[in-house]
Image: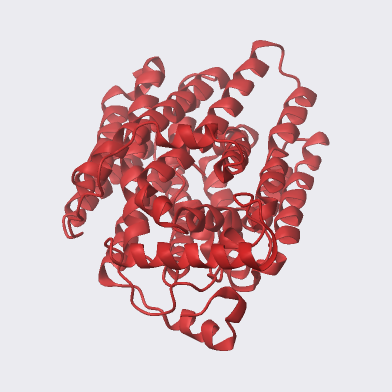
Length: 476
């Protein structure tokens, strides 16, 4: 077993040889089908509501309800995931997603009167599914297979994001009235039901102990605890997600009045994202993370500036391509840092459910804050200049993510010698961090992580960690 300091070309090849287990591949399939079902209809739910009632506030309230209930059910589901059958939690999330689309189909145009209810159902579904999926992901992978899992997840998620919305836009524009919308909502419903059946082939995993409802909050209250910085970083990242997750797609439709062009937008931007995730995972080495993340954030802010000239399909497409190209430089290292930190010590690994819940609550707090700020903006007169300044401000929030994650952006990563957890310096701090990573990896292997090859104590290469943007974050 070698640590990051002694890893050479041999460690590189060992990690490349790590193979995914059958359960890893099945979990990838379940998550990919879940992503496809959401990609088919997710973007177009807000367009469907907008066509019935042109109201930014209504759309924002729908997503605010989604974000609030997502956080609440993620927190509540933590107990079920840790103390009972987490696979039932996963299936419940998929089943409630099916219920959401069944509700949209039954309500039809009346859905605009039930945005809080529908948004809440969607949020509950996401909270249940991702609370279980994130923990199962952590259990069936280890430091040697986690990046490979993430890489495949990123590629499959990007392919789903490319093709599914394009197919939906094609179908909607070639059918009359609301027939196309009803068809794609029905397709999503059918895929969710099929995914529930497929999920029964995932093995039941043992309980992980007692769930501590407020463990994560207590860590945030501890002076100099690393999760105080991690928490601030995740919340800042969530501010951008909370606004851009729904507003950009809506602006594309408003600018074009054409669902096919919205599908084309998703096809192009997701295609760029696919290539970018692969490139970042392949070439972004730990020693370049600090500069790479900052450069990615800076470029994702710069592509907002054309909006000050005009918000039209051209500037929106420029923004979409630029964001897809550069945002993986933020998402790849930030997600890997958090999950590596969770697994670096025995205490963290034993409390992985609580930490995963905490991560999602922190992201959700940022998303809610961003959406509430948008509703505050709507309370006054919304001019193009005010909207552009708002987008620029919320789009710049990830700069705070970079600022708070700096101690982990060096070659040592989450277990490196810059961790704020320690007040010591030099070799003693590095050795302690390496030992903690070794203990966490050994605990995970017997807890019931499935290790196939590689060295548990090695610093993971970020070979495609981007997929966590797809696989570990409910809302992009």
